[in-house]
Amino acid sequence: MTKLDQIRAAESKLLLTTYERFPVLFTHGEGVHIIDENGVRYLDLLSGIGVNALGYSSPVIENAIAEQSRKLIHTSNLFYHEGQAELALRLTERSGLDRVFFANTGTEAWEGALKLARAHAGLLRSEGKTIGTKFLALEQSFHGRTFGSVSTTHKAKYREPFGPVVPGVEFVRFNDVADLRAKFSTDVCAILVEAIQGEGGIRPLSQEFFAEARALATSTGALLIVDEIQAGMGRTGKWFAYQHYGIQPDVITLAKPIAGGLPLGAVLCTEEAARAIHAGMHGTTFGGGPLACAVANAVIDHIEKTNLLAHATEVGDYFQSQLRSLAARHSAIVDVRGKGLMLAAELDSADLAKEVVNQMLKRHIIINCTSDTVLRFLPPYILERAISALDEILIELTGAVSASPSAAQSAGGLNHG
Ligand SMILES: Cc1ncc(COP(=O)(O)O)c(C=O)c1O
Image 1: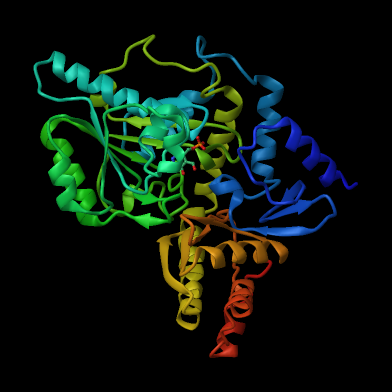
Image 2 (image 1 turned 30 degrees about the vertical axis):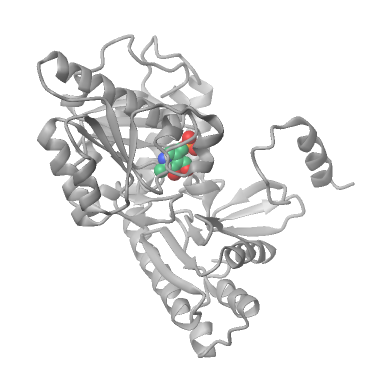
C-alpha cells in the first residue's frame, strides 16, 4: 500500500466526507510548482484556490514567518501587538476605506460585514431614518459556508440541506438592473456583490449594474458591500477588483491571498459604517494575530516592490489572449473572460469540463472547474506563461483538429513556466 493509499483509507474512515479529493499527495512546493510524494512537479494554475499569490516556498513568506514566530505568534485581541495597525494602514491606504476588522477566513469576514450592515441599519433607525434589515444578494453569488454566508450564497445545493437559513435575503438576477431596481427599497440594509463573481464562474459585474447598486444604496443609507475575497489583493491587476469600475464601496471583505497562505480575513469599511460598532459587539480569538499580520505586511510590500500588479495584468492579458486563440479553434470553448490572473474558459459541456480538469492533472497541471462548465484559472501572481496542454487535451477529447498547428505551437511555452 502506498502512503497515498494509506492516507486515503484513513481519511475515508476518519473525516467528514466534505471533499472528493484528487488522488495526489503533495509534500512541498517551489515557485509556481507543487510537488508530490514522488517528486513529480505540478504547474499550479489554481494556487490553493486563489491563496498562494507568491507561489510556494517564497523566501518573503518564509522569512516573515520565521522572524515573527521567534517573537510572538498569538496574543488574543485583548492586547496590542505591532502588526495590526501597520496592516490596517496598508489596507486602508490602498482601498480608500477607513477602518478594518481582522478575522481568520473569508466566511468569517463576510459574517462580520453582514453583522456590520445590520448594526449600521439599526443605528440609522435609532437616528430616525427609515431603513430595514433585508439583504439583496446576487444570483450565482458565493460568500462562504457559515450561516450568514451560506444564506447570502445563491446556489441551492449549498443552502438547502441546512435550512432554514438566515431569513431576510433576496436574490437579484445577475447584472439585471431592472430586477435590482424592482427589489430595492427602504427595507434593504445592504446590497451584496462580488465585483467579479468567483465560484459563480468568473463573471464581472457590468458597469451599469454596479453603478446602479451604488446609487440605490446611497439613496437610502444602505451599504454597498463588495466581497473581494477571491478577486482582491492584486489578483486582477489592481489591489481590488472594484477599482476597475471607479466605484467606491462602503464595505469590502478580504481573505484568501492576503497572508500568502496563512489564514487571515478582513472587513474594511467607511468611517460612517464603523459608527455602528463599539467595543464588545463583535470579536474573534485568533483574527489578526501577530504571525498572520506580519506575513500579510511582507506580502503587500513584496507585491509593491516587485510590481506584481503590473505583472499580473501583463501575464493575465497574455494568458487571456492565448485562451481566446484557443477558443477560436475549439468550438467547445464558448466564452473566455476575466481580469488579470482571474480567468475562465467556459466549455459547452459539464462532462467535458470535468474531463479536461482530470486530463490536465494527468499532465501535472492544476486547474479547476466551477459552475459545472467553467474552467477556472487563479495562478500565483508570479506565473510567467502556460497553455499548450489545454490545446492538446481539447483536441484529444473533442476530436477537433487544430486549424493551425503553428498557432498551437505559439500558444505554447507556458507549459511548465
Ligand atoms: C468570493 C468569496 N467569498 C467568500 C469565500 C469564503 O472564503 P473561505 O473559504 O475562506 O471561508 C470564498 C471562497 O471561495 C469566495 O470566493
